[in-house]
Image (cartoon, rainbow, N blue to C red; front, side, top):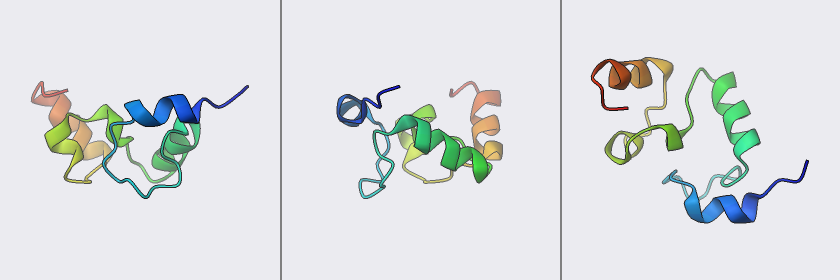
Length: 67
């Protein structure tokens, strides 16, 4: 499988610009899941900017119908 990181980068919603996994979605998801987190692109822009990517924060946003 070929990684389409160059195509993914312009659409990547993560504001952590120095991340080495930026645009490499499979590595990004794997890394976040290992840390009990959800990738930033799953969050609305205002929530993503908090850098709180925890499962708990995501669940709260889902319950508040913000995701």
